[in-house]
Length: 163
Image 1: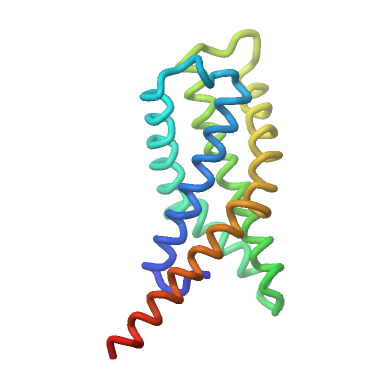
Image 2: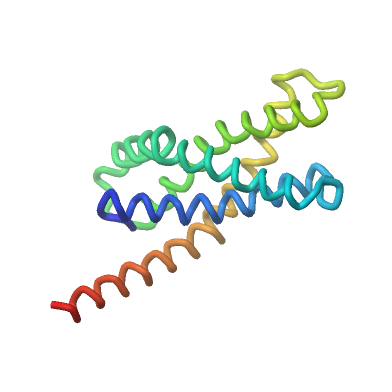
């Protein structure tokens, strides 16, 4: 887990890259867009999605999730409970906002045929939440924590050998 602002920045970036790649791919597949849109549009979706997600993670959802998690796990010594709680609140926050982005993208691309705005939003939210929570808990989160731990250990070893 990150301990400094710089580490938090890199950890958040790594987490956003993993989640945005997986969630964008999931949404393209579930909406039947793979093969129907150009590679340039797919890349644009990845880049735009990443920029929005990373800004949300840094300035809105991340700080709010940390505040909530630290207040409810203050007396919990278990690191696993803290990780699960952080993943849960991050997913709730990110899915809430990124589903708005998905709704806007969908509306811009082809409107909302036969659905209300609120109905479309909740449909997108549920589909994204059901995929994002296990993705975060079982795949992206553990991979990013492992890679981040390795990078952090390598940096510490490099700094020790240069002293």
